[in-house]
Amino acid sequence: MTASIVIVGAGFSGAVVARQLADAGIASWVVDGRSHVAGNAHTERRSNGVMVHVYGPHIFHTGFQNVWEYINKFGAMQPYNHRVKATSGGKVYSLPVNLHTINQFFGLTLSPKEAEAFIASRADTSIDVPVSFEDQALKFVGRDLYEAFFKGYTQKQWGVSPTELPASILARLPVRFSYEDSYFNHPWQAIPKDGYTPIVEAMLDHPLIEVTLNRTVTPDELSTAEHVFWSGPIDEYFSGQFGRLGYRTLDFVETEESGDFQGCPVMNYCDANVPYTRITEHKHFAPWESHEGTTLYTEYSRLAAEGDIPYYPIRQVKEKEQLHQYVQAGQTASRVTFLGRLGTYRYLDMDVTIKEALDVAEEFLASRREQRQMTPFVVNPL
Ligand code: UDP
Image 1 (tube, rainbow, N blue to C red):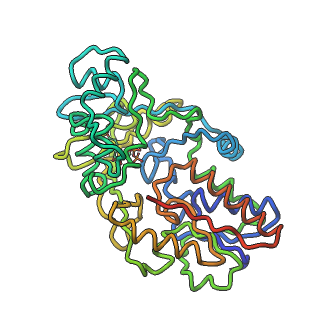
Image 2: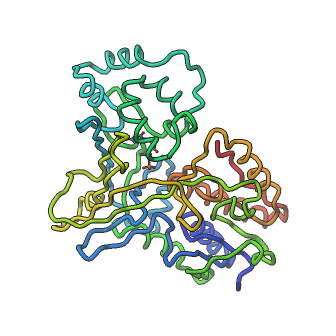
Image 3: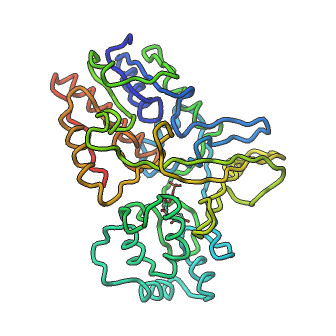
């Protein structure tokens, strides 16, 4: 260890903090257990020329102007509008649920106003404050749409009943009473022209940043560091002392074909009896490129076991107490800041990850200037 500031994880969180500190004249050591930077946003071009999102689809979208400007400093971002289709009960629909989906599903020709009234009449009005995913779905779209598009997919994706999951997962998806079928609402939506990995490499490319890959570190090894930014799993930092937190991992079956396999980047399979959740056809993430070959990922979700890459924090409603203990431990631990998807055990999009890392770096620099303790960065994950 050469620098006294250690950043564990070379994903967006770690890279942004390292860069902000370096730009302020502070050296850091960034260490990551994997053989590449960029964490789960890592991209690689296959021999057929297709840029593959190695750990599954990553679409950059944000409403934070400062984050948009920040990422653009490190590589060219190509405007990209994400559209998703869903297969349910042997038919293909438009997602997220929009006027087209509603009219297709119910065989109607409703106007926006009529659709709104129609869905409201099917929604469960007895649910006041939705706590679980299922409450949220029944309150906002009613049972038919819930069962067609959310119940099976969510059960496969999370491995638990939607009654056990927080409402916030569904709150990620809009329901629209217009034909707007863009998956995200944000004003800036893009995919890096050369992939995410060169962007993170550019962030880390600074004489005050030392990067070590293929190296796992334990908190004990870091006890002499002046400060540690930990973007690995928070429960791993505390040796699972309050119990292991649950994560889902993904298995991708990669196949190559020629031509256009499915005509869209992502096709979700919402039925419970189809074992996979979705098929991603990576070349559709780069419509500005042209390739004869095509690379597909058929995606299966399962509970992460020891040694698996953690993807999604499960955050079961019943885990609230356990999470609370980790949050408290994180708050009281000195000289360590937890950040990112795994460090804060939250379902984070890339833009929020970058925004929070910028905020964390700013607070660290301010605390140094003002010679005071850094305010702990802790967000309740439920
Ligand atoms: N979801 C669903 N059906 C779909 C798409 C999403 O039930 O066809 C639910 C599911 O629980 C999923 C969540 O909505 O985990 C968030 O979806 P998103 O597309 O944001 O998932 P990501 O791409 O982050 O895996």
